[in-house]
Length: 139
Image (cartoon, rainbow, N blue to C red; front, side, top):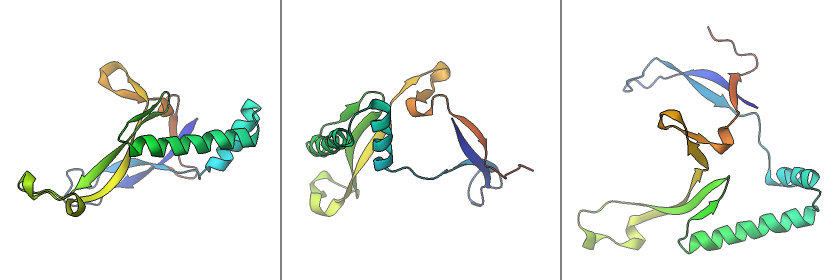
């Protein structure tokens, strides 16, 4: 497994890393949930209806539990929780939920474990290597 990269120059003049080159991943396309479900059917020998029912129920339960303020932990996948973004006020008594909450967003923290040096190795990244984007040669 590998991700493809190319180099991108930082052209933000106010940045301390202005003019430096950084690696950027290049998407190799998208895969839909429907395609993943079909592959899960082939791999597990479950019917498409069964897999669809499980995925649909998972979606419904995620919405319900998150909407109730709970954090949803899916072992091996990660943690989902809702957060709010808001406008700051000078005094607590000035805060108005309808006016100062700008949006509610879903946060996702992928599952992982700490490794040497205190870094986190995320499950979805384990075993993945980087390689140059096809046709790209560094100078």
